[in-house]
Length: 411
Length: 109
Image 1: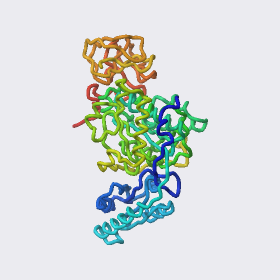
Image 2: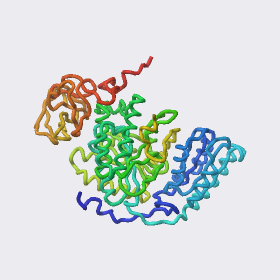
Image 3: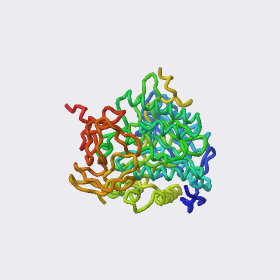
Image 4: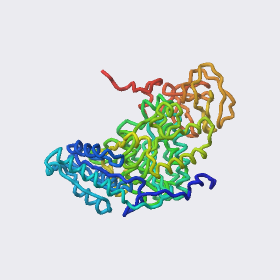
């Protein structure tokens, strides 16, 4: 690969937000967390009353807790794009808002928590919570700024609503961009192992060492066993209508977004990459006493999982079009289908179709995408951020985070 | 820009970048020795056209990899989709409607 690509912005810096632990952030958000469905309304009202693009809602619906969900909430609290955390509970649930606030405080972030039962109900909790968020937003204006380059970024990618253009243009473009990002010691994460079915050898070969190869192999085997068990592969009516006939065909188009560089290892949801380079995210549930559960029920979960691994921003490649954004990590929606881009131009961020009609090379488009990423990282809001999209999805799931689960554990 | 796009020289199918009418002769672009091909079916935009005759049971190759197998004899120039090919993994995909992609194996009363 030539040295030319992305040369203009290779050493260009932008101003990020200093964090006590880990990488600086590209946003400075106040996260309002509900710890059970019963406190969702109150938490949502607190967010809405602040009328700020920088206040966001996430939460977990269940009263009984779940290690996977707690880990995910903690990963969002520790995320570099988050500067302050308010945890709102009802008062009976398993998940402890006070402990979440303690973790935020230990990270050097502004933190507070409330139980609605202690505060006296809906109105008083909303008033107290809104006042705290207003205060936090003012405080965050004083956050120390530090200079960052593209190589400081962690970027995640997934695809959703794929059609024939996804493999030829949208994902091919992300793959080329990821090659450059990784070559400049940036960090890239791709996911959807259930969309690598049929491509095991190709994927395993790219493992950087024996451990990575074994982890990729075991992760693939688990995903295939999962698909066989639930009789559902990750291919949908829209994909078929768009010209894709089989999961293998879709897989090949999906894997292209990982580019060509070696895979450093496999991450589970909420795990941070140990160092820069290209990483595979495994969001498939591990076999457990409740059996698998459901994986990848929608695109928002995939985006949330990438953000939980520390992605500053995420790409969603969608041939057929999608409108979702993401809490915590801004989402750049890329399509290789020019009709989709025109029809949904208020939502689609980046048109990769010049790759398909031959008017621009993949290399030229990767440069344009890099410039666009630079702008978003510098603070320009994505179209989904501007429209208020802040989707999140935190389900009950089981994953063994002590390492990649090997097949024998299920037996 | 009506043509059939071949991604890899090993492929036996090409992608129609625009809808091709039945009986139309279109240029083949990309990694193929074939210069042009006549569509013997209508090929919807983004769908696949057979570059050669493919025997029942033989591999369907796109991106240089096997993406499934032929479930019927496929003639050169045919539309290749759910009605004449199937996944080697996913037993359900052939139960979808080849035009809309909608599932035909789920009962709606």
